[in-house]
Image 1 (cartoon, rainbow, N blue to C red):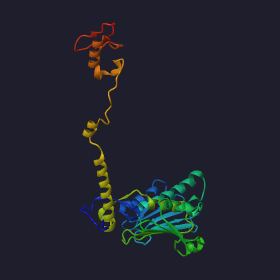
Image 2: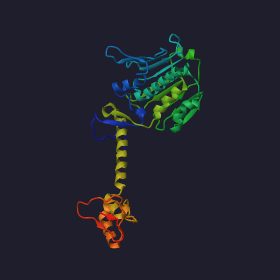
Image 3: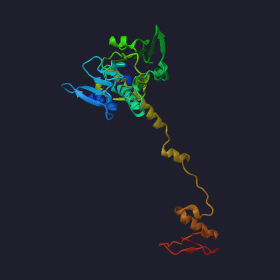
Image 4: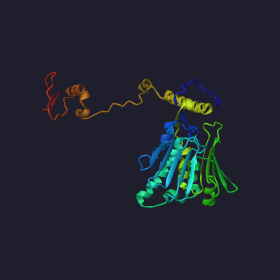
Amino acid sequence: MPDTYLPHHDPDTETLVRPRYLAGPGDREAVDTAFGPLRGSGWHVTALGRDLTEVIATSPCHRIRVGYRPGQEQAWQVTAALDPFAIPAWRGGFSRTTPPEIIEAFLGQLADSLHFDTVNDTAGTFVSMEGTWADANEPLSEAGWPTSYTDGFWLTRSGDGEVEYEVAPLVDPAVELAADVQRGFTWRIVPGDPDVGWSAGFSSCTPLHLIAAVNGAVVDNNPLVRVSDDLPRRVLARALAEQAEVDRREAEARAALPTAAELLADGDGLEPPVAVSPPSPAGPRDVERVAASAARSGTAPASRTPLPDPAGPLRTAPADRRRLR
């Protein structure tokens, strides 16, 4: 199917987008969703600017700051330090068009790290460098994304070639931070649509479990919901074509199921009759049939408590004094 095929659709219809790294930034509410993990956790979240479009979040210990400024190229900026007045131990951020759900996963992991330190009376989990590069890269490896190594740089690409994830050699944090360039871990999504292409970068000393959270969110196979009118034509066409294929497969699966008439004709799914002896446990549904059989055989089933029959007198079997309705 051509990549630009677009059937008739309502531009306000919600559309499922997969892979999620092509879903784009969504709307203003999606930006608020990204800050969700920080709200209610003691973080101070404040909207700034003339139109309240800028957001600043500060951790309870004042050692982590998260800022969203849509007017800047790297709209999302994060810094972390062991002391509120010290230089950052690491920093990084995301461009404005990054899907907020990916940022939400990162901030959620960051908030969990800080909470872990608080609960366990430890310090530095949010700046810890424990683990290996392979740990951070594990979500991509499990997704089957190939990785190559050249001149000290590790480069991982998605199967469709849309995503490039690069890990640079570890450098002196002071030199790296002074240069104001985050080259330790970088993501680039360049599908050719400016409203979908995005980038992210973090310094070399960014904790590896936070990098793993980003990678896990990027390869997450669950689709993201977007309004059709907010998606570039090529991405929308891809999403609609995929949904049409899903609908076709579901229709074929339903058509392959046998109908009720076919089940009745074949006898499948029907419980076969079961012989019950003595007939008394057969249940109230077959009382009249059991009574008739008892009358013919001269034996009636036992009944602990005789019940009056509004329809007529009780019948008594000749073999004993047990009575049957």
